Amino acid sequence: MTKTIQINECVAFSKTKEAFGGFSNMSMEYPLEVNGVVFPSSEHFYQCMKYVDHPEVQREILGERNPLLMKNKQKKHRGLIRKDWEKLKVIIMEVTVHLKLVTHWVKFGNLLVESGIKEIVEISKKDSFWGMVPQVSNPSVLVGENKLGMILSRFRELIRTEGTREELVNWNPDSKFRVMFNGELLVGVNVPDKVQEVGNRSFDYLLRRSAATRHEYALAA
Image (cartoon, rainbow, N blue to C red; front, top):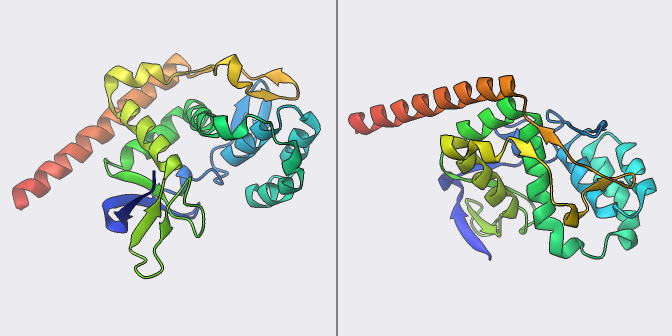
């Protein structure tokens, strides 16, 4: 569903080097590793899932480390994209973001918590499905479906709530979605106990700090 939002009412990002640029699938600060396979970025993982029936294309995707160049190069294989992709692409993006969080529990989890409570939005020049596009007549107004931002915001809410964090620490996608690489299902990634503990302490600290800051501003007002 298309909606509009003022840019000052959201946590916006568009480039990987910005404060919240780590939310971008193009960021290479968060490589993913599963079943011994290293994906240089979330975008590499997501694009690979389009071609689960063509391992040779998946290997070609991993052969180009630059996420933007990789994305552009794989367009020549569009005719080989799995037939159920349109039905599954949002689910696969959720799987991708979840793997990113499990792989970088403290670093990416902190980034989510630090983004506060405003809606997360990726500003795009033309993609109004995953992100939102500035209006031509008023660039401070963003228009789009913001599917990626909604996924990020949902994971943020789960990690901000102590009682629901345990839902996130294990990554094991349903086999019916065929999350595969080189002909094999990708399964079984979890956050080690010690890393969970470090993350929980860090998240709770950030939440207490942000709550105190909001309280101080309220008093000042």
